[in-house]
Amino acid sequence: MTVPPVRSAPYKRKEYWNEPTMTWWERAYLPEILRGLAITTGIFLRNMGRWITGRRGAVTTYYPEEKRPDYAPLNRGKHILTQRPDGSPQCIACNMCATVCPAKVIEIEAGFDENDPAHPKYPIRFEIDYSRCVFCGLCIEACPEDAIRMQPDVPDLVSGDRYNMWLTMDEMLTWNPKQDVAKPYPPKPVALKLSDSIQRGRDSSTH
Amino acid sequence: MMPDLVVSLVFITYALVVLLSFGGLLTWVERKQAAVMSDRIGANRAYIRIPFTNIRLIWLGLFHGMADGLKMLLKENFKPRTHDAVGYFLAPFVVFAPVLLVFAVIPFGGTLDPGRLFPSLASWFAGRTYPLQIAQLDAGLLIVFAFSGLTIIGAMLAGWSSENKFSLLGGLRAGSQMISYELVMGLTIMGLMLIYGTVDLGDIVRQQSGVIAGVLPAWGVFMQPFGAFLFLTAAIAENKRIPFDLPEAESELVAGYYTEYSAMKMGLFMFAEFIQIAIVGALFTTLFLGGYNLPFMTDAGFVLPGGREIAMSHGLVIVLQMIGFLAKVFLMCVLQIQIRWSLPRFRYDQMLSFAWKMLLPLSLANLCVTAVFMWLRGGMA
View 1 (tube, rainbow over the protein chains, first blue to last red):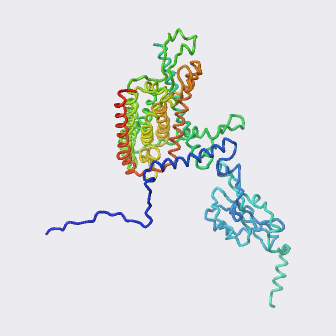
View 2 (view 1 turned 120 degrees about the vertical axis):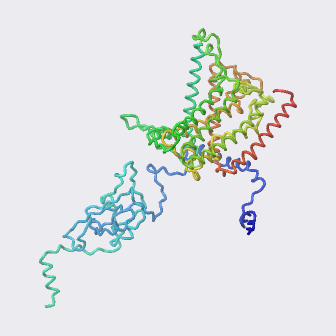
View 3 (view 1 turned 30 degrees about the horizontal axis):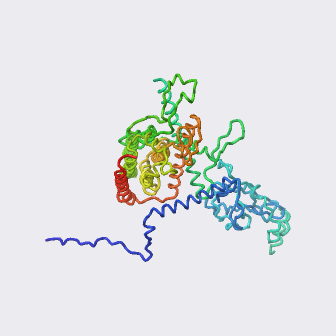
C-alpha cells in the first residue's frame, strides 16, 4: 500500500487591508535613517541650547526639590483624618479601613473613652506606612464615619529609609474641617453615670 | 635606549589614561545625551560629600559612573555550574584586553621633539624625535584587524562556557554578526589603502595633512565619503550596539552572551563596549578625519588658504594636535551615541542580509571604483 505524497501549497503570507506601503524613498532606507537622526539631533541641540543659556531643557519635574503645580483636584495624594468641632478625630477605630486596605498599611490602636457615650471607641494610634500604600482610596470608601479622606497634595516623605515613611495621627490631623463638614454636630452628651442607666432602665420598664 | 623606554612608558600611560577615562566618561555622556535628547534631565543624584562638611559635590551626575563601578565591584560574584569554568573565567578578559591593544598603533599626535620641548634635557635625548604613537608598526591596520578579531573569540567563549541557552544563542549571533561585519569593514578600508598606498597608520595620517583643491583638507572622508559611511556602519555593528545589538537583545535573549555574568565580570563587558566606542571613534578619526591634523595646520603652524601663515612654537603645536585628536574622537563618540539612541533594532535576518546583500556589494563597488580611479590617475596619490 502506497501512501499518497502530501502536497502542501507553498506558504502564502496573508495580505491585510492596512498593509503598510512605503514609497521608493522610504524603501531606500538611508534617507529615512538620516531624517530620524536629524530629528533627534535637532531636539538634542534645542534642549542643549536651553540648558547652556540657563533655561530649562527638560519637561521633567525635579521631584523632591520641585512639585508639579497641576495636581488634579481629585488626586489621591495623602490621607487626612477629619475632626469633630472640638478637634478630636472623627475616627471611631472600627478598623474597616485597615481591613479593606489591600496593602495592609493602616495600623490602628483603639482606646475606650467612657466620657463620650456617642463614640466610646477612639484611636490612640493611627498610622499609615506610605512606603507600601498604593493610593487606591479604598479606605475612604470603607469608612462609615467620613473620618479619612485624601488630599490632592502628596506626602513629602522622600527618604532613603523605609522606616521614615510612616505618617502618624498628629500629622494627619492638621487639616481643619470646620467650614467643610456639612452635618451639624449635636452638643457633646454628658457622661453617663451608673445611676443614669438604672434610671433609664426604670423609665423603659413596663411595670 | 633609556630615553626611548621613558618615552614609551609615558605614551603607554597616556594611552591607558585616555582610554579608561573615555570609557568612564562615556557612560556619563551616554546617559546625559540620551536624557537631553528625550527632554529629560538624566542621572544627577550620586554625590561625593566632602568629609566632615555638608558640602555635596554633584557635578551634573558625573559620579554616577563611580557609583556604578563600586556597585559592580561589591556585587555577588555569581558562578554558574558550568563544565568550562576556565573559559567562563577568561572570556571577559579576552573581550577587554584586545580592545585596549588596538590603541597601540593609533597615532594620537604629531612628531614630538623632546629636546626642543625641554632644552635642559636636550643632551639626554640627543636629538631623537618620537611620533606620538606607542608602536610605529608598518602593519598598523592589520594589527587593528587582528586584535579586533580577537574580541569575537571572547564573545563566543562567553556564550559557550556559560552553559545557558540564551548565552549560547547570543554567542552564535555575536560570532556570525562580527565576522560578517568585519569582512565589510576590511573591504571598505581597502579603498583607503589603495589611495594611501600603505597600512601604516602614522603614514596614513601624515598623508592627510595636506590640502586638496586649495581649500579642502586632504582628509579621508573627502577622498572616500562613501567608504567612510560604510566603515562607520560596520564599526558600530562590530561593537554590537543598537541598531545592531542582536547578540544581547534583551527582549529576546535576556542579556545574550553575558547573561550568566555578574559583578565586575559583567562590568568588564560593559566597559569594553564603552572603550570600543572610543576606539571606533579613534579609528574613524585616524582613517577619515585626518587624525591629529587640524585643517590647514602643519608642524610649524597654520597655513591658511589665502596664503597667510601663523607660526607657532613646537610645544603649542603638539598640544593642539593632541587636543584636536581627542576632540575629534569625542565628537565621533557623541555621533555613535546619537545613532544608538535614535534607531530601532534590526531583526536578526535583516541584519545579516544588510551585511551580505547591501554593505558587502556596496563596499566591493566602492573598491572597484576606487581601483579604476587610481588606475586612471596612474599610480598612488
